[in-house]
Length: 230
Image (cartoon, rainbow, N blue to C red; front, top):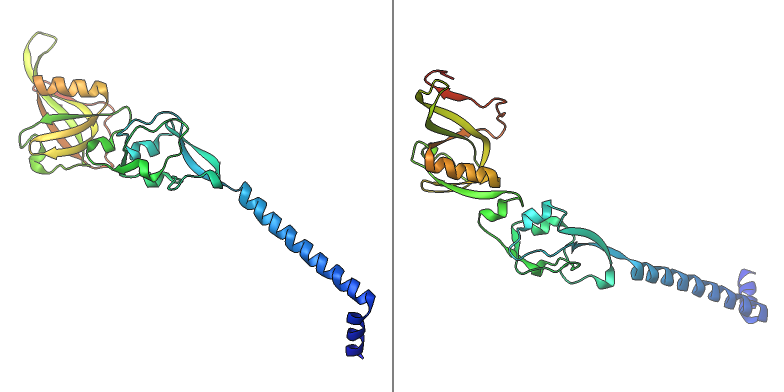
């Protein structure tokens, strides 16, 4: 009986019309699905790093990644995204800008290359200053790039009575060592600190004191003399 009814469905005019309607509905659904996927693809965007202002040649990728002043994350239509466009700041690690990058430009991997030297570790407001030290003052070779040190100076000075006495003073705490080359030690400093370190290296004797990375700073840096004793 079922086979007979199926045969009639395919042979009668009504059956043919019904099958045509079913086929048209299926085709319409397929078209709607296709158009939906097509529109999704056309309207898709990608989060890309874009320069907010000129990024000078030689700019450290590590510093760039930490500062949003030079770039912003923009939503770029998928079809307009450049090859190698940078979508994650981790891509910038250990690199420098190979040439000036213009404002509103997408940042791409080809614009950056491997970088080396202490400049990679400097924030925009930091400087690198070199001091020349003797063996004991430089901790007998026990410091290395990445060490943290306290910066002491010893000098002769007059007390309130006008008597000249030697004293030692803790000038800076928790200073980052950027590099060591024999007796030359490169330190990270602010511009003002750099000037004070240069003055100290010219007019006093400098001693570096190694500290732990979790050591706490002293609220009142000491001045040691034969009178105070501490």
